[in-house]
Image (cartoon, rainbow, N blue to C red; front, side, top):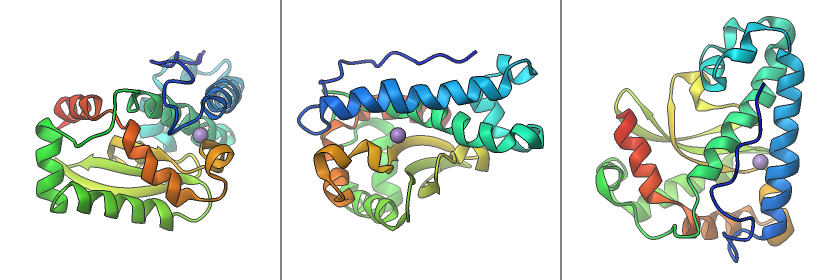
Length: 200
Ligand code: MN3
């Protein structure tokens, strides 16, 4: 059975960039709901005991009658569990370490990378996620619809941004662009670098 992971910081810790009420609802209501629906779908199956990312990696091996629920709600659980960990009240600034070098090399600089990432985030129609992923040792920017995860496409997330309106509407209204701009202030590059070093 899956349970809600604790946030690594307080609900108000990402203020003023991400407001307390948004964080509280996002974590206790939205993320919890994905977990509840995932648990209900896999109850009594072998998937109860398998790491959710391992399940999503081989999503086509999940029986058809529960595959869509696992893809949507398991994806929601995986994506949000990841999302909380790559933000921090001490975040922001420029990426350092190996991931900083790789971003410069791949995208031609941090500013250029932010532009490419924002473009991917803005052009994702409807709900979804923007990602920095690693595949075959190479960084790339991509996006997914709904709660689909790059893990199901054989890619490993290094950085991800929730583009669902529930993640920004209370503070930024319909302006996804404003939300993307301020989000850089809470990105935990130290954690992103750790992820990168572990998977590269
Ligand atoms: Mn969300």
